[in-house]
Image (cartoon, rainbow, N blue to C red; front, top):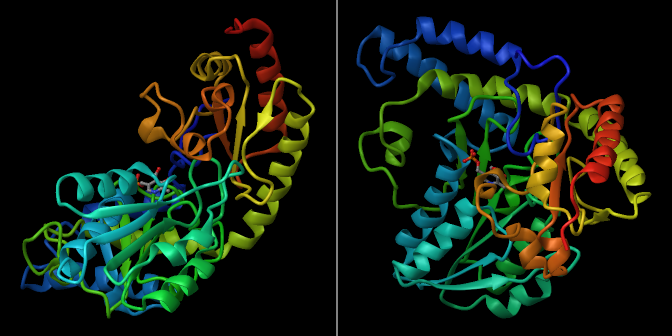
Length: 384
Ligand SMILES: Cc1ncc(COP(=O)(O)O)c(C=O)c1O
């Protein structure tokens, strides 16, 4: 898609530019396949056929069954559907649920709502100063009445990769009835995905060069959920509303494009991350917050005593775009949720900047960014 020619975009975790191929395919589909996919005449059947083909392709890519794939409007909806859906479904078995202290707001606030409005009891798996989950606590936390554990795969602020296989093993050993949901938004197209470790998982298209307003919920067939949107037969009765068919149809292609070059992209971005880390480590003013073993697509740093939003806006004057924290919370003044959970020093927590990389990023862009950051640090006023 059109981008400012000289713009340096380093916020790919917030969202990605739309892939040209996806844009063109989507445009063509929109013009032709306007019919309601549930209409009982040939136009409707044709749209429904394409939609089901897309579901089949996605299921194949993720090595799951077709009816385990549910299209949603975004990953936030998938997270809400999975978590509330399981809680309402299995509340008669127990009302104890577990998550981590550094989830995306669409999980964190869902747990908060379940606690405050619906009377569920929530326990939080703590995170250490490096950003790693203390999984040794999970076994003790899981009880007879624990119906759900939800953890993300890759943290969206510092990039920590959670050991979801180990977490799954602990859950299944301690209470096989407990359902495990994983937010895989920042892992899709970047890290290997193995859905056999969990019962439910959430994905988003706009993080992999696809459309905004497009997400996916994987739900294992032995796991039941109460739907969030009760309506017609769409999505097996689990997500009502007229199907956003063309969006669903194009998601298969979006995922294929993201997955087919995953290893190549990962190796390339690893090199970029290594270079950026090395260059930034040489600067005394900079503290690196992302652990060494984090996803290479994310590098979180702090520049203590500088206001991060001032630095972000100063870089913007050079057409360089990075963020202070998760985009969903960037207009709030409090510290980044993940850094707060990590209990890092206050000066570090309030001065965080998130740089996120892509296979589209070049070393030249990183050099320009580093130069611009040096310049910003020399001209922006230091805070006491
Ligand atoms: C880890 C994680 N989960 C969920 C979401 C929400 O995705 P969506 O924008 O599709 O609702 C995001 C987006 O920032 C994310 O990074």
